[in-house]
Image 1 (cartoon, rainbow, N blue to C red):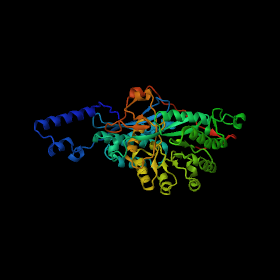
Image 2 (image 1 turned 30 degrees about the vertical axis):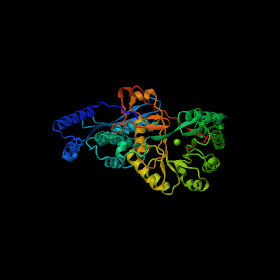
Image 3 (image 1 turned 60 degrees about the vertical axis):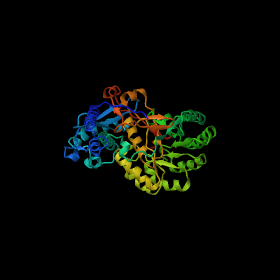
Image 4 (image 1 turned 90 degrees about the horizontal axis):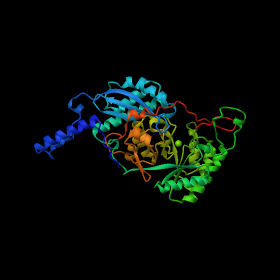
Length: 453
Ligand code: MG
């Protein structure tokens, strides 16, 4: 694991304090005595009657070094040099999150105590009365993760230590293999197996095989909707998945774990039928089989097939996990951590899963910032019922903006072993990559009907 030294004023000052304690203790011959230990493991300021550390400002930092809009919250405190970072990335509506943070969250937070994360979470959550939306939840996640980062820096511990310490030495990850034919997918899987990955997601074309099926949809010929809209041939997709699994299993053997993301776009009975057909190829999990509007179909799915299921990427509120987890309707918590409001609610969902043997599988694509990846990696290290983590690769540009990013080796992710979340941001570098406001992800049936993800 890589150790990256940080030279913030705060850390420098702490190092000086420790040196001062060390030299006094050395002269007095106190090392190893209870008194010296008491000095080294300083009593926190608030417990000695000192004023609590307060929030001085909260602001959004927006950047897109790899093309996806990323939003990070920076919380400054009254302690010089002490600040925290948290991920607030809702890539498709990034500018709306920036407004929520700079125009509302800043005012709400200034002057409040940095210590009480649960209270800050609960009070911001209800502060707008109406809640549960992705914009405010992402803003809240930025604040929540930044406060955990600050707490780790103050405790001089990585955040996973505050969550209970390590349950594993590093984090097993899956990566994405793809191609427009089953053979191309198998080749891509072999490439990643060569890099040490033991868990690999397989997709033919885009989600729902969009792009892999080249026939021209009727809605385009009729001039309906926009020329840039995508077309999904639903039946071609449903038929292609078992064929892809069969080809990859034959070419790549029994050892590799194979995953697949339906991305919610097909009809429930079609997906149930598809899952039954891929059962013999032993998928690790099938992800997001239904859109959130179709939760009622889960009982039928479970009664029909033993294929493990991951669910929850589009859930907004951790209450959405409660009933299906208690009924063991899926096996993996597929959750975009910033979407439900950060580490605080995600740890509750993870702990709930321990009771029902439902495991974690946080959403970790390129539209989670390195700060967000670090936040979920710290939870991955700590929770017992960890399942798998989606791998990510950070470009050179991203790593110039964000230092201390989690690292990947032989299919495992590791965090930076410094206090807090371990990731820092260079705001001058971040400013070189402005965010955009275009997002176009419409997918239609051949008659032009919009398909819900
Ligand atoms: Mg997904």
